[in-house]
Image 1 (tube, rainbow, N blue to C red):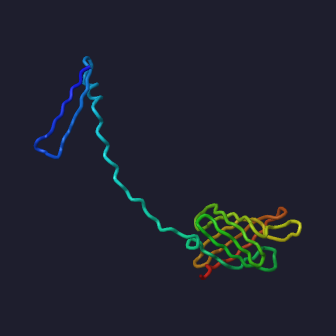
Image 2 (cartoon, helix red, strand yellow):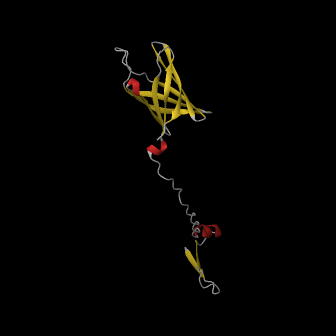
Image 3 (cartoon, rainbow, N blue to C red):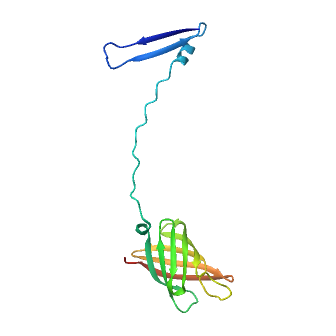
Amino acid sequence: MKRVIFAGIGLCIALSAATVVVAAAQDNGPADAAAAAPAPAPAPAPKVKPAVKPAMTAAAAAVVWTGTINQVGRAQSYAIEVTLAAKGGKTTYPGQNCSGTLTKIGNAGDYTFFTESITAGKFDAGTKAGCLDGSLTLKKDGAAMVMTWMSSYNGKAVVAYGSLEAKKP
């Protein structure tokens, strides 16, 4: 096998030099010689700075809505506080001594849907006291938030509804 090295330096361009190495076997054609030449180095990818988003605190991201809701078949209305964040939130029923977590299910048009899991004051069938897990549907309407809540007990629908206002800081 014979190797031929050819180096060419352009005298007119003092800063540029090129070296080409060509290897060819005795009976191998020019295709093998081209394959033996080193591949040109790929151009470096342009450096792109990642977009820096300001850190968002949970307090800055959450919006608190308060109001009074009416439950169908119940004589008295009761207070509710709904704290909403990007992926869920929490509910508090001050007069009922209950609270829960909201998991966002999705949006459709102006409506946002959540499931609610009661985490404190959960309904006790023995004493018939406490709050039921349920689902919330919220719709922003001007400065207000319209809310419907739904669950079931003993095969019957339990429904509540009301309007909420953004809590002033």
